[in-house]
Image (cartoon, rainbow, N blue to C red; front, side, top):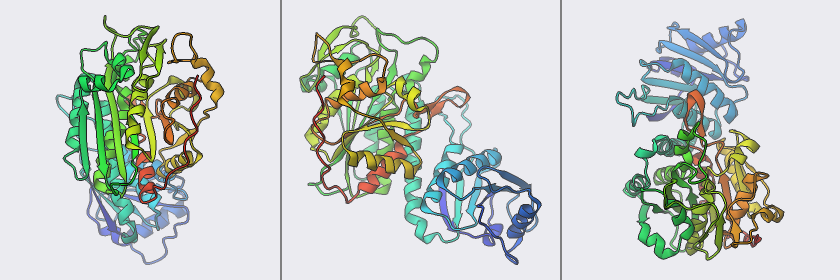
Length: 495
């Protein structure tokens, strides 16, 4: 979809040609006299009580006099916070989303903040997104052009451009997460990463099974053993900073389908396990956006990718494997496979001497129970990194919430037969999973985002959300030019 930012006000937008016009009206708006037909329409609607400026409330008007657009939607945005903008834009876009609406104008009739403009762009894209890849007769996105109008476009150009780039990243993440597993194998995911390397500033390397074996990634290889699809280890690089600048490393879980392995999952809703690579998809999305935003920072993306299948070669409950770090792991549950591929990637990340490492994974159902679909679970080894991620989530409206990493939670990972077990029972499952990963991330500041509750929606609106691309981009852009070393992470407790 094509976005354009334009200086428009309550008077000039009345003459803007479009198939539909959405006017965002906040509680403080005062139309005043002699400001044209749109101002008069808003004034009359407010006086009559037909227009409620509460966020998400709409008044639709067909062919109003003196206004070029045949369809006008007056949308309340409350005080104009990012969350309220999202509510209003999602509701208004749904109201005008028809086959005939190809050009849409969305106008702030009062001054708008950068956060409000960003929220409007992301919400417009989200509301109009359509998946088409595996449909025989795809009905694509009807909306082709969106003009976002603000009273003064000049100061908003940078945040607008970043928001449009973020949309590109989110939609790439949605595309790969939404694809069924036979259209998104590890090999296909690696090819998608290679295609990103055609963009400026991005490089890609893909490690094959023999190279992974040579590195000693026994934990990653164990998960892949039960599948006919060969594993891939994807390394992406974005070089926007100086050569001496330590990179931020993003590690995305890339299980392209998760049956649970020998510890097989129940059949209902197992199709949704194609979404188990949403962490990997988010890393692809971030790199797509970085190519457009071009921040002065270095970023590395690591994606261990494979399927988790239950054939005769598959790893069994009770098997012990040796990770790249040299630590041995007793696999008590083969359905706790995400942490098994991530731990080797976290060890691999050490070679980059990173500024910080953030892993992103649809890791635990326990996190869904704890936080639902509103906030992603966030764990961090340093307060500085945790605060930066929390702030990025609030600013981008891609929310997260910090959960604890007390060493006592690692007690359940003890075993008589290896250095560590891969599960510790149901209680505090999201935390014990994070404690497992922390063992392999004690050489650098580290954070873990558990996106099991936020990466996709079920039911009638089933599909990927593209989260947490917006959060990660906000964090990276904020770090650009501010890469002084973080406080060293405390050494992880050994279970």
